[in-house]
Length: 265
Image (cartoon, rainbow, N blue to C red; front, side, top):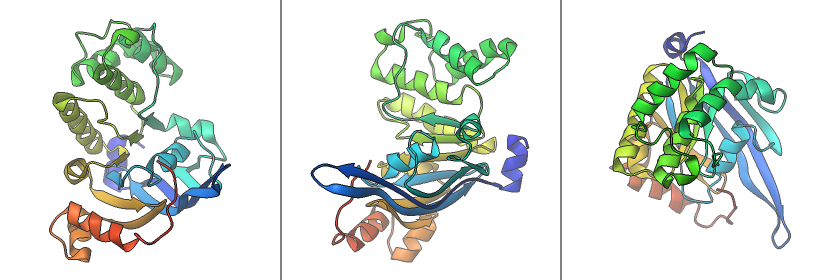
């Protein structure tokens, strides 16, 4: 199925079912960073996980990206169970996280070309794909500089381009505008919107309300490892009788203030 066909069909691209991820801390004992989380999102949809640091957003995305194994529950990418067949799941996704490192002695161009080959992009298509991404993110002036010499924002742009160099049907983005200036953040937002139009399923985490309002078709409000509500901005406001996303989020946050805290990010 092409991306455009996927967008028209609205096929489920990411599904999380009663996901639990527990960790053991010597001081606290066993705790659940993710505590029974469930959601699904479709091709051609931007789905946001909105919550504060420690809500379980990053842990959930790392399970989806096959970086962490779940304690229980199920996570599917394009129908592929990430535990049963992690290699096939990885072929279907691009993953960006805030602490994704770059090889310091490689240039940006070498980095993108290397990962394009790893993902099976035909050799003859790699230069054009790298040039396209360089133009999209305004990287022409430093693409041939070593990554160790780049600024934080420049490294972030290279990391974003690396995540999508193989044009995956599913994008998982953990705080994708972290480290970017206003121009870089705007380019990232435009890029996500373009991927949506092409039929890509985009799942991203953020604690920035304006990003969620601008980008998301639907938003999951996440606190203490649980999904408290899912809906469009209008639906969330209507359910809570509030005027904007900030007020809606605070409505749900106050509803769990007395719940014992969980850890996770």
